[in-house]
Image 1 (cartoon, rainbow over the protein chains, first blue to last red):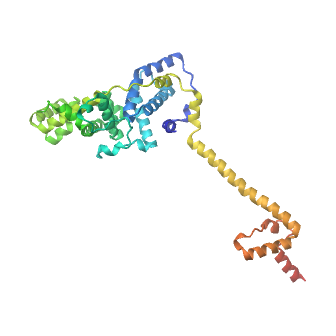
Image 2 (image 1 turned 60 degrees about the horizontal axis):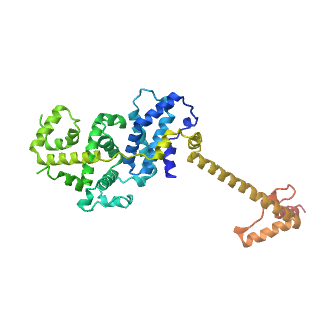
Image 3 (image 1 turned 45 degrees about the horizontal axis):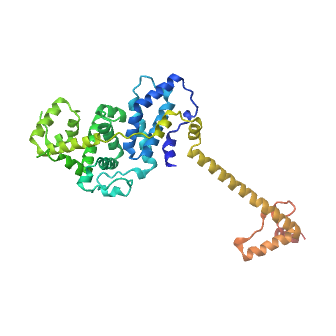
Length: 207
Length: 169
């Protein structure tokens, strides 16, 4: 039910007609899939933090692309549009399911624990165990989950996907200064959440 | 260009990303040389950024590729497009309203017929008396059917007709 809910709000009557695409158009779609599918999925995964929602979200994004294929100019910059779709779908998902939101930026990590999937390890594990890659990834994902939606997307686009401030500003349609301040704020919060890991790496640097 | 500690700490992320103007970047660099807290903050941000950058790329499952490559089925698209929850609610609401209207029309019709038959059997006068008696004992539960009394032109209210007849005589 929830999964369908992600898809329905954007459905428009204009998309009812079944479109017959030419082989050239289908090839163009395939090219878009090849080029962006992994990125879209990865961004979706880092946004929602679980494979099933990530799949629904990114599939829905490509469904939109497929439907709009004829309206998209062959040489138009697809990237911003595509990631904006992902962002909008994600915000829709949050609206539909407020439970997904773990927004309180200043609340201690412990309060979020109840809502997190079971496979995540405890953040208070021994330092040896903490250094294990898998646990680190889970801790980072969990820290990302404590960011508000707008901070989360900016930091994912910048630090995970490697976009420049200007590109992020164009994807999110916000001023450059907003990107700058959101990213700074997001990193500060993440640094605080990931303190044990950050401090472990700091050693030997700031003596 | 010189900047203070507060301004510098605000610019550290952008400095880290190489997103400052050359003059700003130089000023932040100068400040970092003389400010240990800013150096520590910068280091923390740099490590945090590094941690995020090291995250493995989430690999889409096979079902994702299948779904994305296979053009969406027309049926599913059409179903999602027009059979929306709003429309479902509308149709269900309409049906419920129709049922209520039907019940409101049927109940008096059936009860009216039954009462009519009963009144025809015992006579309207007796029927009205019966219900007048019932109404006096249980005013809220009287079951007289007004249609029987007023529906037929020659079946006027028994009490009224009695008065009228008495008066006429």
